[in-house]
Image 1 (cartoon, rainbow, N blue to C red):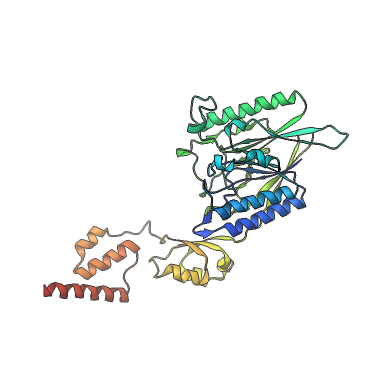
Image 2 (image 1 turned 90 degrees about the horizontal axis):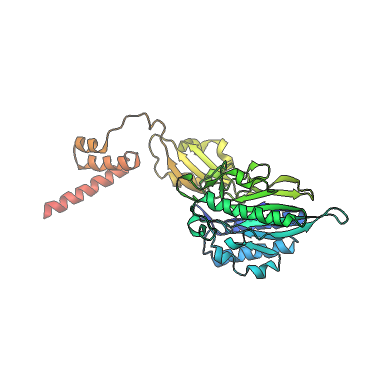
Length: 391
């Protein structure tokens, strides 16, 4: 049985104000082509299919198109809801969709009801892969329904896993069962990035890794970096980068082959990024003039300027060379060691109104007024003085 572990599609998300729907369409094209070329039996989507609980019509159409194309390619789909999804809306028409090979697991009551795929070569020992989909479990909302006293991520996840274990043991009375669990959660040991929404304040949403012991494979969703926590417990990560903290991520999925004996072989799958990310740091002159940054001219850029004084029209100048500069920050070199005069001290030392205005301008932007700016301020102050004189 061949599974493809994906998660965190976040359809409809933007990247620092830039729409990503076209990039997400490109990902779906790659996904379908891979499923066709590699005879994938089941595509797993471990939550956060949408980026918002109320996705736009074009976003819903993209998911509809993806599911139709995947099933036409011969693959089943097992999909769970994440903390960004509306479980009720995503789970609409689940019984009808199941007839077409799309299996939604968005209800707490269905987390121990697996999608069972029998497999094996004819004439040899047969096996069953039982895929359990655990939707995102918000403790305050599901604790009572799960019969849990403490509304914590650990307690509700532990109860969910125990229910799955009991179902697996019951099914094994009738023959071999290889359980696969999809869970949208934060497991201990996972490495976070800036584009994920916290599951709880203070990091208390993490659940221990050993909760998933004994399963053939656990396909996790929520963290956007593809990573391995154990040989059979992994995050696929998001198919696209959704923050500059993911600039060094190699986006992809996990291809999981399960033998009739329950052994797994896991290989990485890499998606081609439609546009690279560049995190640049340096002085404005260096960034604009050095050949070492030529590769970033076609990338989305996050730039931190280290000039001692904030350059005038920095963003406009940067976009001449790096037209897709999306984030600009300033971190003057030596700012932590140099001695500065407080603004109140500057006010006390100012000799006239012009110095007060120029001092304020320098204080708020860390750059002194230029000749043209000083002339404009002088002209404005003179106009005010003349108006007051006429009163």
